[in-house]
Image (cartoon, rainbow, N blue to C red):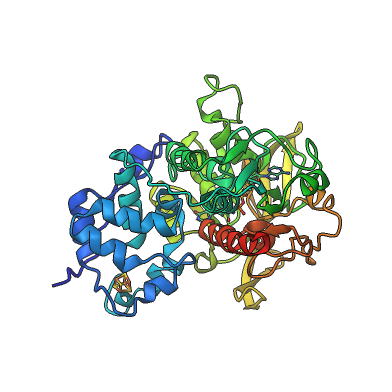
Length: 456
Ligand SMILES: Cc1cc2nc3c(=O)[nH]c(=O)nc-3n(C[C@H](O)[C@H](O)[C@H](O)COP(=O)(O)OP(=O)(O)OC[C@H]3O[C@@H](n4cnc5c(N)ncnc54)[C@H](O)[C@@H]3O)c2cc1C
Ligand code: SF4
């Protein structure tokens, strides 16, 4: 008989976790995982699978957990998803697999993300070797540009199929947003590193500190390689462009999070990179990036307010992150838009904002925010972090002669990652604009299928 209530994972208390960068959620113990797995109805037509962009056999891996066959469960999971410990932690399950689990009708869906994480962590803790069988070695060379989830997945897939794969990354650490964007308290970097190490076992040659377009010209890659996958993400920050943007204390979320996550500035002076310690921080935006920046600033000791121009209902961040942010004491000033940064001697001291109301839905389906005339007010702030979105890096793409871009500057590619250049495939945020880890991984995998067809 299925258990009714969804089993929550073990979590650290807000007052304790808000002071450090250690992981917030501790996940399931073996017993809790088995209890939760037993709630699954093992549906004959599992709707959950249709909600997973890489089509994991969800009832299959859950059934093995319920029987305590953790290794078998891991093998099933890993055959569909090369980064399960990452996806279990960061996928927006409420709009994917869990959002379409049949149990939504009668109560709470199965906690698929926490079960995925449990199995992946169990495999790591038990040093389970990945059984890698590379069927054939093919004397064809692939260049993958960018080591985010799209590039990592494409590189792993092509290596598994026997191709020689060189993976180019501009940073000194592979992982893309997983290492420079998402903080330790949500996704420990040791976990990402272990999952990346899997690629090295597959024989992928990871070439770090190489900005393609500067250190290597893309046309040179086209001459050297049989096929190229572009997975460079959409990492160029957008700014609101309001008065005072140049003031000391105004950051893009990219810069702030890169300092914190990649350069470990929260450990300064033990780490070389500093970050400004502020008293009153205002984070502008309502997505995962805004939540990550706000919760990072809180952990540096600041009072943090998230300013968002719509209401909480329209916030695109994962539900769990909004809840965690609230529990940790972050304030939310919704239906509010900054209009001007106010400085003193070149330093930010306050932000002038205007109140908003919601109008008709716009092209994103969310209700459009409209300023309320005369409602201006001032918030005290010595740091502002803009997390209002990112865009494509145009410099690199302009160097690929003949590569077609869409009107927003992203690469034009079909559902299989094919671009306007025969040898060149692309996927992830550089095609879709900012999206999710699992969609980027799905795109990397689909492109691998198309690349294989092209090369065979
Ligand atoms: C702060 C933050 C939090 C997020 N939280 C979540 C979340 O909780 N859940 C979720 O599903 N999604 C989340 N996302 C979105 C998700 O991380 C992205 O959709 C995903 O990482 C896109 O993968 P990608 O491989 O396309 O690009 P990226 O992860 O951006 O990786 C691109 C890689 O290419 C490299 N690169 C760029 N240009 C060059 C060049 N010229 N030469 C060589 N290398 C280059 C970059 O350094 C980077 O390593 C978040 C994003 C951010 C910024
Ligand atoms: S839809 Fe829900 S209950 Fe049914 S198999 Fe999937 S996870 Fe289990």
